Image 1 (cartoon, one colour):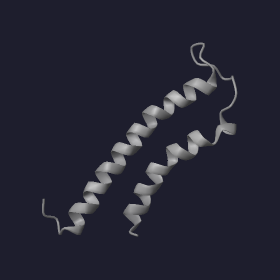
Image 2 (tube, one colour):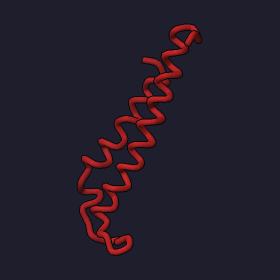
Image 3 (cartoon, helix red, strand yellow):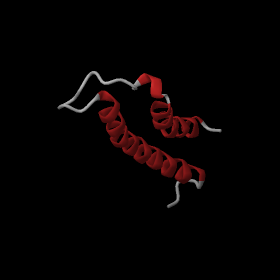
Image 4 (cartoon, rainbow, N blue to C red):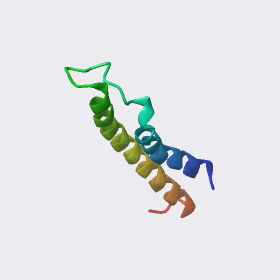
Length: 72
């Protein structure tokens, strides 16, 4: 496994860990515009996970180009 693939794996695993660790966000406070923390934390992770997945995809493409010798 290359270091780049390890980074890709971490980028894809981070949202899973953050959402599956329910004890870290199973609370009401702090609220955001009247929405309890429990809900807005999960909604925030939708946006973060999208960005991390997009970044992982771009890194994967870079890795595949490097393995093919830079040819597109």
